[in-house]
Length: 69
Image 1: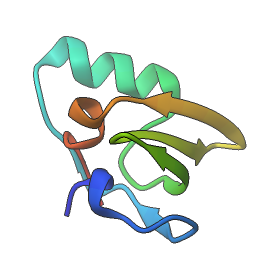
Image 2 (image 1 turned 120 degrees about the vertical axis):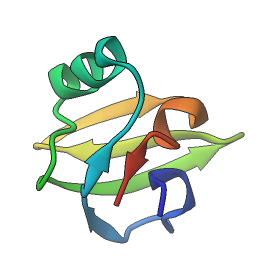
Image 3 (image 1 turned 180 degrees about the horizontal axis):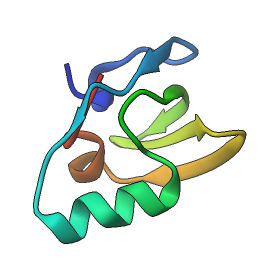
Image 4 (image 1 turned 30 degrees about the vertical axis):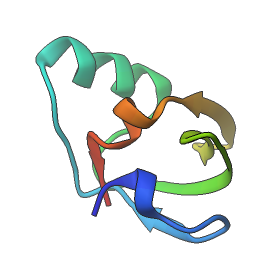
């Protein structure tokens, strides 16, 4: 299921990251790597704030749809 569908406060493990190579590299640099745990902190208008690797990162819904948990 895409990260955009996860409920707030629920930890999830990243299974796969889709999209073009540039997008996957960008997300990897932010800390979104396969096997890591992410937690959705809040959602506002489809945009997400997530905890990943002890950091809070804001991503858009289009990016969150590419991260499968």
